[in-house]
Length: 635
Image (cartoon, rainbow, N blue to C red):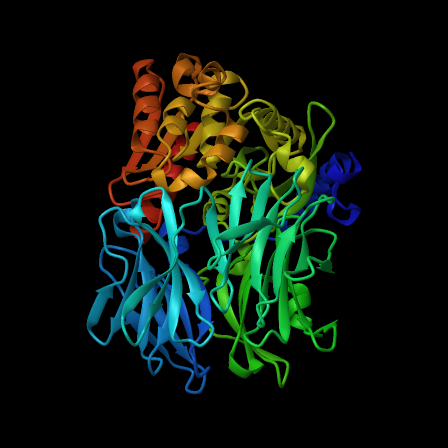
């Protein structure tokens, strides 16, 4: 059980939280008496925050390519390091555009687009005004896998040959031709290929916690397993050495947390290169493999360190020690680093670090200047003691304007299953808290980031033990000073949306209201209709959730749709019509049944969204609708 306990510095006991909140209330009251107030911001103001991602360097290192939605939808932009200028490279009036890389003389663009938010995903090349769909086909899904070693093309995987099979291709900029590197006739998913095209890494998902890794010889059509025969752990390939003699991978074999390993193909010797106290979630080498970026997940917070391989020590970069960084990229000649910085009160932004001078510069700003970052709520680490004594990590968000004697509150449930609530900026939580509501975000059992034992605790117990963790979170909220114990609701998206419906259905007296964002209501329908492109992980999904044939009774009993007569509290449902993961019928069905029982239901259906809310006008409508729902049912 020791492995299920978070490190002391990250754990706050319930008593400590109660005392802290009492102190917080006291301080807030004193501040209020001094006429210190917090401004309430509108959904339109929150939606003016920019979505930023990317940060890849051009071939000559003069430009940084990124994605921003400042024009309304995500679009491709470039930042010129020398001139400090930003240029819009490509946008679409209907669909989100996500930048991937520049080519040619750094003035041509590779980008990806998901038309209508549906199942098809394509990769495009743009040369001046000429746009080519590299991966055509109505139902084709293509996923970018990076630039090749000499920057002459890109790698991608695509299911154009077969809906269930993802082959690996190399697209060359000069010839404009996609070359098949590996025809995947296995039941596995593909990963990195070696630089000499002799090997490719394959993954086999046994469960959501157990993944086998294979080294496949493309020329001889033979494979060897890099994971043991009795594997009970996660193995994930991270690439090859430049001389093609070694394989890098992450695993938590024999450990609660993932570590970084090197495997010599000839001698079969394994060497642990890096091990941390938390999961190493990813690693990235610089182009010449002189530096290595190591990413860890520390209680829902993103950390990164950069190791000088030749000197065998980490670079002393003060900024990296305090900032939450999700992605770091090396520029040509290792002169610059770009990285994505996140924070509870700052949406993702891109920064530039000059390694020669050790100075940093912010090149994109995401927060709407109308919003004072000091008005936003900082999450407080806390711990829920669940029904069986298990410690459940969570985060409390308190409204800074504490003028009300009693506030309504919400429990936030994250997506997945197997996901994790991260402490980076959450627009919907900050909006709700800014309106005066307290939020408790819970990493229930089954969440990633807290060791493989913790992650496996909800297997085939979804909507049962993890839901009891959520209910214990509600009890913690009810025990706090300043919370209206009779006015605590529940909100969540995707799998978290399912937990909302499950809570209102199977524990109808626990929560005062619920807000379900594209959540599952019928597990039998979802698991019987998994998309073809999920074929490689279908077995793992069934082992975790249950097989819709063998375990049909269990799944029936966990599906809120069939017991919706139990729901007696107000419900809001938000859904995208093009959702490829949670079909619209999941929401249509539950809404119809609950309305039939004369229970208040607000149903927001976006005809132009998929799994998530991308467009700013739809984000505004979502927040506005949530705000109105809370005013009506939480006050």
